[in-house]
Image (cartoon, rainbow, N blue to C red; front, side, top):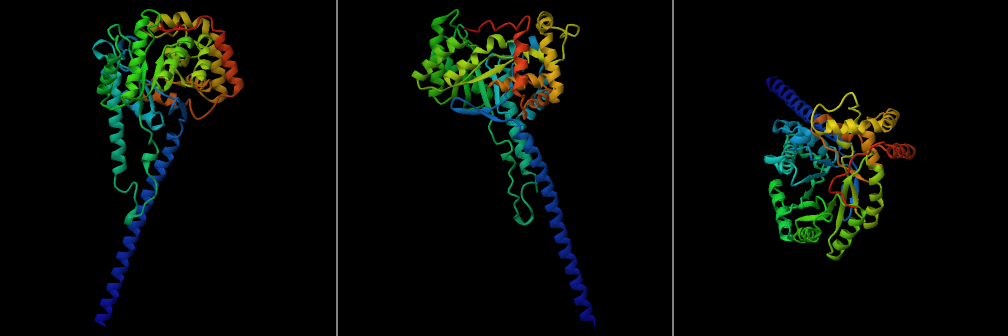
Length: 401
């Protein structure tokens, strides 16, 4: 009887152990499955921003501009804002934005090059955070080595793509100096290669001899394996075609051309669509929100508190009322903000807009411009409203024909 009682007790104990083990395994499976589903739900956000071609490479259909990162004059930047800017960066990266437009001249005075430095720092931090999330116990593999077949790196696996604009300063008169400028940008980024090396503006209007040297410099940057493609900024159709022919003669791919392109500049900017199609490069639209004028945040009685934008908006807003009203009506129809209407319009015109983002709210606002499309009739209505603007936004002083 004693032996029988022992056997029965032992059997019950083993049964309890097995039940506890199985319960533990099932609990772990449920927790890991829940974590996997959470990440999968996040992947729908990551896939929100689509992809388009840009010459020989593929870029995100929405980019992020970094002009304000380090700009005290126009945007009242202060290094204390860096954490807010990083939150914006992480948000757009997680949503699938890969293209980040910057320049070696971005940053005021002692902060020159600040945007490139931040881009490098932010990407390293972003990747480290992703790595730490991936390594958390039980998130990506089940108990007993059971795998869920889901890798979170597939959610945002596309690498950061930095498109740096190199300034044709008066002292940069040889191709080797342009290559050195690219190397300095890479040093600030702490990276080995740019996605796109761009000329910030053309010197053809005031120092023509420097133009060819700069083109040679861009080609040499590509030939030395320091970029995947080259680009041009503030070039008009005529000069774009000339530059494109020269790049072809050097067998260097022209990926992008960017100009100030928004509903406030459409009358002048629209001719660049055909030119870019002709030379087979992607048109990048910078300042798609016209420095914030198209956000719906400002009116003649509510101007920016200080800085150059205050006077600029005072001059532009009276002639933009019909456009702003049209944007408001269309926004309500689609359940979108005026900013999102302006950005989506730029995407529908075949461009890649690169609005800036300095905080989480701005980042989410920009991302909300993707994942849907304005219908042709709405695009046409906005086109017409843009062409009726009383006083368009002034062109960049370096913009060529």
